[in-house]
Image 1 (tube, rainbow, N blue to C red):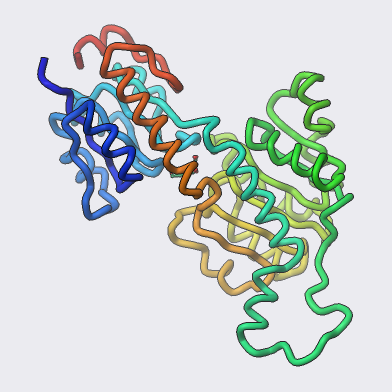
Image 2 (spheres, protein in one colour):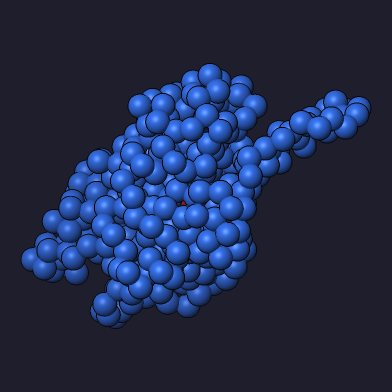
Length: 332
Ligand code: 8YV
């Protein structure tokens, strides 16, 4: 049988590319261009599989235009770029890249929390601008981290990682809100107490968002939720942009309704709401929570392993859907 063909939609770790080349005829995106849906469909002609990086929209129109496509392996734990139902109906296997990024992403969640609470970037800008001429008792006085109340919305693997860091490393009182409660054993391991979203917003000193982006999670934090938070509280978003109403957040930060925010993800990224760029009490990073050399390599390798498994006739390692058998047969 001739070798299967795969497309790698964006530049990824060269070691992962080399691994894939051992198994497949590989087409890469040498220029690392961000393709439009039409360009992606054109690139996918004749391809059996594709490695995506989380921003390529895989929907019914694309799948109809690519009748040979059998598997889409996302190099991300989130897969809100997939229309999972359309993929199942079209007989296409989708996979994601969970677990390998959990601890790294939790580390970054904490880094962003610390930087936001302790005003790290704001004070660095002040210093670089030559404004530091004398000490004063309240210069960049921030919010306490140790011993404070950490509220986590979305208690999956990454949320649990943040809870453990907060409870065990910083003696924080951890509360969480999630679609479903953790088992008593996991709650004990994370030293986390389940509360309603309202209670969490009212009582947490630091609110961290780690929930997946779905239609019902759109604007989980908007003007009404920001109004419930304490004026001394911080908000950290390492989940997805659409979970926070960025315009309402910029307004709340300007008005001093909350103390500060740390954002790694944005509505419409890589564009950032212009109002957020003008408020000083927000730490902004370009969606890098999983960005360590080792973790990005591991994410790529897991996506690659999924392609090898599926196109080799094996079960995927980390599936996100079950393709319709009859539609699947047509593609094979
Ligand atoms: C990725 C992410 O960096 O895994 C996710 O869901 O958001 C990030 O870790 C991004 O999707 C690119 O792969």
